Image (cartoon, rainbow, N blue to C red; front, side, top):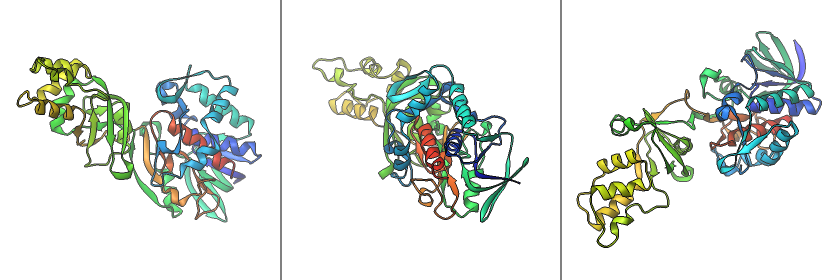
Amino acid sequence: MQTVDVVVLGAGAAGMMCALEAGRRGRRVVLLDHAEKVGKKILISGGGRCNFTNIHCRAENFLSENPHFAKSALARFTPVEMIAMVEKHGIHYHEKTLGQLFCNRSAQDIVAMLERECTEANVQVMVDTPVTSVVRDGQFVVTTALGSFRAESVVIATGGLSIPKMGATGLGYSLAEQFGLRIVECRPGLVPLVFSGEDRERWCDLAGVSAEVIATAGAAKRRESFREKLLVTHRGLSGPAVLQASSYWRPGEMIELDLAPSRQVMAPLLIKNAQRDAAAAVMALRSALPSRMAERWFALHKPTDWTNASLAAMEQQVHAWRVRPAGTEGYVKAEVTAGGVDTAELDAKTMQSRKVPGLYFIGEVVDVTGWLGGYNFQWAWASGVSAGRAV
């Protein structure tokens, strides 16, 4: 039995940041992970270049039962501070669209940075070390295949259920329930959507076709819209716009797609003496859509006549394509897990359980889900720092 101050379960983005922050304060920290190396999901993120933050990050970019919960942590460790850490380690980066920051070289640079910081903070890192139990008898006892640890604090940074091939498990949720914390129902987030059989027959032969759209999903207060690319796949819809909308979608609901944002595609046909026929309509649709998609759209939405009213109806349909997905591609293709440990169970400043002193939850395991584009990493860093400064 080894006695330490803090045991952190999960050597991903949140867990490593928490461990190094606590270690800097002189805390004796052990960081455990069942995988054979640290930061496995970091390494595959951003196409291998790690979209490590977003310069526009705000609480409004996150989905949670409590939309205000993330504010405290995000204010405690900002994108500016993450950028400073990256620059301190000489990591070169660049901005893509919408404030997304990526490493110039490789996501390995971010993992190496975190490893160096953990080493400097005297964090004991143990990989290939599955946790078999966590119990509390005044202090916590964490039992693993390689020995046990007694600690004042335990931080759960085990991530969600997404990408199981990378070793994702439900351990964090099981531990939360074991200690009496409520779980907001988990579901795949930032995930491709699957067509119904009828829509699959209509559209999936266009797999690979892409267009800029506005995708809208969700009901009432959780309704959001995203203007980015849509991609037709062999099973349904993907691309950044659809991935974003998927986090707000629930089974049985519609998503709405504006296929021609900020355009009036039928306008050329409304000009006096303009040609009004199938060829003219398809040409007009091609101003906003790839040729094959324009042709298919017209074939499925032919007007009954060429009156102004019919053209106006076609215009409206282009801006409000309503699709009822049959489901999602599931956790296998999901970038994140939405839902998780109820934020009402946690202190927003420290991430500590309100019911169980010394027990903390950070990162993806918590019911805070960011948009696509570096937001989930910033939540990992920020929640990790918040807990690391408190344990």
